[in-house]
Length: 78
Image 1 (cartoon, rainbow, N blue to C red):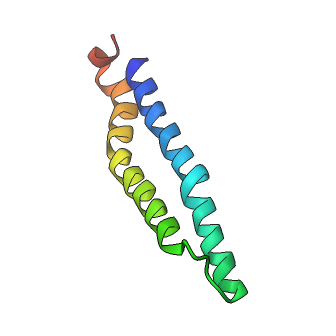
Image 2: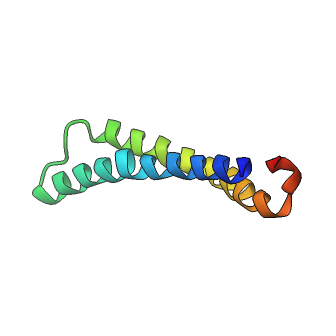
């Protein structure tokens, strides 16, 4: 149970990165660009989205390991 919880926790962090940072920032930049003038802070928004996306990429392997470890390495869950 511990390992699946850790993996699920990583999954929630990744979910909140997408819904809270990446998606809203990308929407602001795209909407501004389609309107004819990108937002003044487009570089900052892009950098924040990039860092959150990179964090998700780094967390994906440990998340998969901990979620798979719950059934394959039962000693970690005790």
